[in-house]
Length: 406
Image 1 (cartoon, rainbow, N blue to C red):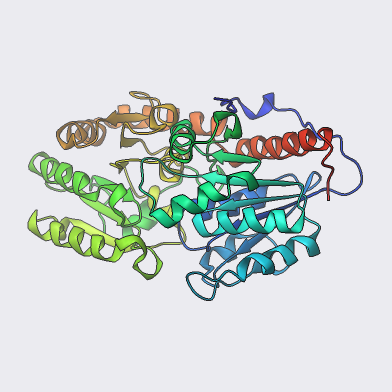
Image 2: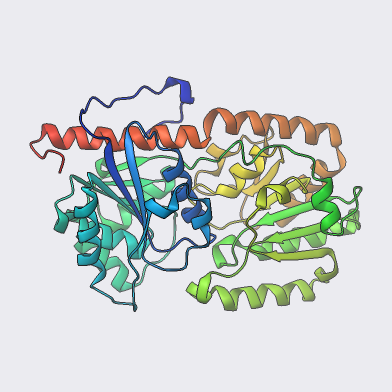
């Protein structure tokens, strides 16, 4: 499979030799709620080199709480509202926007936006159309699967945020591996940085001496909260003063059964006697201060793409304990920046959490290593350079093939 390997930012050169105006890039996403993909799209829009790219972001929903994080959103954010589930008018309306902006490349994120971007991009005659893969090992409905397969010919390249995701998508859609590139997520290392967490702890009613474990994740089945709760129950037997932060909520409108899943998980807290030791904070805008209130964070997912929360935690010099799924072994240097455990192994998760919480010198050492690792390999600067070079390389290839910029 053709991939973009993880290389320090300093190794990247700019490949652009196109004159005239910067390349117009339009990123299309289903919404701008508090999700990992949505946050990555905003970060990408904010950090692509303005000398090389004029970047616009289009949401298919008016629900855009992350719009405040988008620089110059008054001129760069466009909303083409999907009025109902099968609103086919989204495609011609998006195509009109692409023509008006003179888009060179359109890149879709999440199912609805990905399909709309493919069709609208071809309708508008955009120079290059990109799709995305942000996860692994999930199940599509028959309608979704057929939609992706029917539009395979519309997309020039699929950008996955993990090697596992690229392989999964290639198998699922029966698409040749040459149509994939891998660009792992990036984190804003200025926004997510080590800071004194005392004020955040105080605001949450936590004592300075309390061991604090955080889980930052939406309430959806793949995040596997039950494994964390089982590990937390084990941990309390040895460290009864431990507190647990749960940051995240169900998806907007209870999408994908996340409302029912949250209800089950809240019930499980009571069954395990964890309620009094947990703080359920819901969605939070300023999550960086909450990472710094933690001694360690966990992510017990059943499957992932590139989890933003691991990168964010490590950028804040907070070690992580995560399941060894997808590309997590590439993201988290085991026994250096954190630990990896097998899915379902709540016993070993509790063992590693106990070690980090009780060995202060080891925790500081791991935190320092985690911060350095993310700074070198997974910053938003690295993300933007890798994605920008992918955009330019694709457009250059199509231009050589006789399909010039629009």
